[in-house]
Structures are given as C-alpha cells and as structure tokens.
Image (cartoon, rainbow, N blue to C red; front, side, top):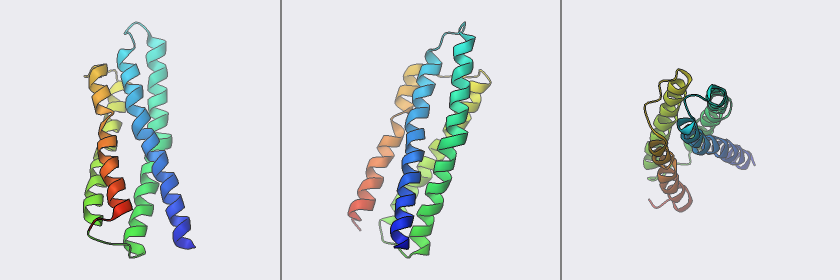
Amino acid sequence: MLLLSIKAFHIMAMVTWFAGLFYLPRLFVYHAQCPDHDQLGRDRFKVMERKLYRGITTPGAVLTVASGLFMAFGLDDRGGWLMPKLALVALLIGYHLWCGVLVKDFALDRNRHGHVWYRWFNEFPVLILIPVVILVVFKPF
C-alpha cells in the first residue's frame, strides 16, 4: 500500500515537473516574439516565467527526484534499466537548470536567442521522456 502511495505521489510530481518543462520554453517563444516597445507584455512574461519556474517546475522536479530515488534505492526497485534512466533524468535536471538560466536572462533583458531557437529547445524534454517511459514500463534489462 505504501509503495502504491509513493508511486502515485511520484507520478503527480513528475506530471507537474513535465508540465513546467513543456510550458516554460513555450513562454520563452512568446517572450522572444514580444516587441521591444511592448514593455508591459515583456514584464508580464517575466512574472509568468519566474512563477512557473520557481513555484511549479522546481518543486515538481525536487519532489520527482526525491520520490524516484526513494523508490529506486529505498524500496530495492532496481534493475539494469535503472542506470540509463538515472542518466536521462540527470539530462533533464541539466535542462531544467538551463531553463533557470534562461529565466534569469529574460528577467535581465539579456535574451540571446530568437523564437525559432526556443521552439527547438522546447522539443528536448520529449526526446528524453520517451526513452524514460520505455525503460520504466518495459524494463528491458
């Protein structure tokens, strides 16, 4: 019963984290498209990005990693698939931190990329999520 509760909590935290990882770069796209003369719009994006990153995405990441590590090492749920999954999660953590740098750059009006770059940047979490799901569901090794 405890394992089921922990897995349910982990899934909710992971959905929260990924919602932020999918939406935050989309905000970057819109922010990058916002004209320089629209200061009100730019300020609104800064607030949205900061609140999404600090208030939703980062807590979701922390809870996902903590509950995932607890399940993997605290409940002895290990297999050969675990190390590749942890490597992919490490990449996602790096991506998450990179998003934080971009939030800070936008806040300081130091954006160096166009909206097309952010559209491509937005695809990275999907490329990681698919193999993670395959590893977790099928546990191929």
